[in-house]
Image (cartoon, rainbow, N blue to C red; front, side):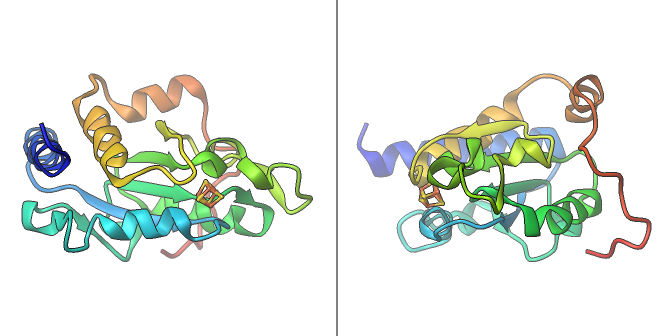
Length: 174
Ligand code: SF4
């Protein structure tokens, strides 16, 4: 199958899985926690002329309150910890956190920096890691599809693994 056909098939399966799991299209909020912006370029490509995923209903939203998935890029910078966790607490259940790229996986090339906690897992309950520097859009589609097709409630899995390290700020406002 050619790459465009593969992407088309993946996108259609993703839309069908979102409808089956959520009863509507999937909404994604990007959370940049200190990346070099190359991962963002690949995420932006999902909405560009090649992938054009909005035609299948997959939406990039601007508020975590409207999101199902938080796509985290970059290492978890210390100065971004509170903002990332506020965004997580503002996102309604069911929700998933996807670490996109090697930096979000374990800090990547920035892991030894004094300004970096490590990967996204250090501050958020990550459900899926998509490795790469940066990972291509088709791999992101495969990851999102795997999330939606996975059995079980993400909140139950999270309860078994423990909560994020910081407690929610009662004044948090997304
Ligand atoms: S994984 Fe690579 S492309 Fe993505 S933010 Fe890190 S250095 Fe940049």
